[in-house]
Image (cartoon, rainbow, N blue to C red; front, side, top):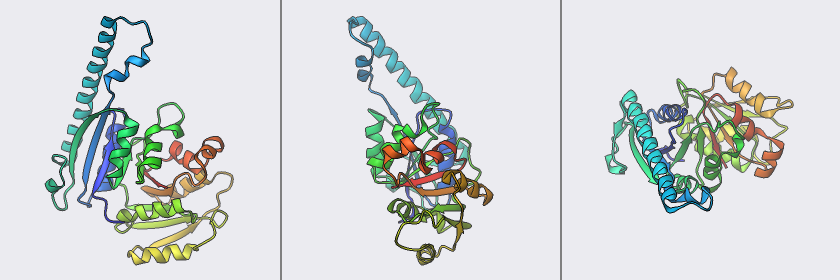
Length: 291
């Protein structure tokens, strides 16, 4: 995995938007990466089918005008958040062009697009190295977050879920959850941009959850090829693997967790719970997921 150079940050102007961009900055620090901030707003024509039948032409026009004004208000709000973010961290604002990147410096661009968020996010994520999204805490079912699932299942790229509070650091003390699955291997590969520079890297594993294949010592040896000095930490999952894993991360003062997502079928995770769902609901550090 090459160093992360293009980081996508879709934001909607929610209270978590600033936290998401701060998380992205912490992860991009020292990588000379470009932060591509994206705001997607709905097509006002999509509002009409939701308003029901029997509306007069003037009423439809009024509804569309109200939707357009809301879009403009949200765009101004998001742009203000972006401008404050760039100023806070002295980030170099650029157009959305690779030739405007500055060696060793973090750059950022702001783009607005009209359309369906689920479609556009997956398109943009496919040509980004990683996508960082806001914590999907909407007061509803967290594991049903459409944006998160769109990126995980349709983009082919890793995603980082930002925590609910801005982290002071990210990617300096990294924990990697390992169970031998293809999903955990994908997360490990995606983590290399940070583990090759981290102060500490810990592989969390339990023999009860290891699949047939390479042993934990082989994981450590693989990382040594990338000059990563990792240590293995066996843990007892008890009745709740996610809680036990997060407890160890906190005890180690980890500021990033990397893990495979939905090793079991998605419908099974939604019904039975699972580590992915637990982390979405409870993690207090950035969580990189891949599958």
